[in-house]
Image (cartoon, rainbow, N blue to C red; front, top):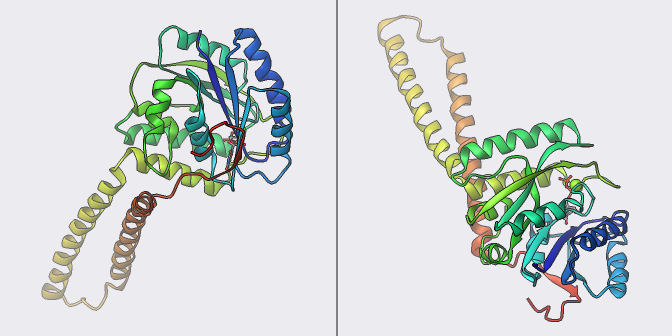
Length: 313
Ligand code: UDP
Ligand code: MG
């Protein structure tokens, strides 16, 4: 029997915490686990989340919290939980009950069969907007094509992993986290189970479109250099077109009389090359910005308060 850490990132989830806690406790009871910890990471919530968590912690010794100094984003919050986790196996779960806590039972049982990672793959996703589903679907297909590491489709961070995998990911110094990819990258013995993703218990998604875009770019830049190569290819392509245009222009100038015309082709070429250059600079910028993030070497999160005995990490 493995002891279990359950990591729960929290950003303004005051209406979900108690319901989640009840269902987690029931799940732990069905697993007959005595050695476990719930790690709530408060990611700069503006609502009553942290006081609810602290009051739960007074009732139950197994409840740990890490109160971050501000909002560091979902991935960094989960990473904080991973660094603090002390048990044999680690579960990551969302706080909004979209990932049903009961699924942990199947995750745990599967892990016990001798796997190192068991991720939960969504066969349906209820209560999410069509544009979120559409963008997510194509993003993951795109990432799968680009990435050298096979990153499972239709999975979030909801999963269980052994301490070994958890520690391996904790030791990765990269600043822009894409945990589901990093975990896939570690190798070991990985498998999945299927589940039905539920609608949010309460409240709205905490992933705004800018956050989703950043997350998507983190995923792509962490697992593929293809966009950089694409910039080179686009450069070659436009150079090729430019050579064609050069020959054509010379031909018009030397062998015909209507060489004044051609303003539109000039504009089209100018805009085309300008556009391609801007896209390439943008791609470079996305990578360069992340290199800079890593060079700065700032910590991924800052802890304000915690009830872990040794919380000076
Ligand atoms: N979350 C977080 N920090 C953030 C955004 C989200 O800790 O900046 C937490 C949030 O409270 C939830 C989980 O991450 O427990 C997943 O977020 P959400 O449900 O909003 O994402 P979605 O399911 O809509 O993709
Ligand atoms: Mg959610």
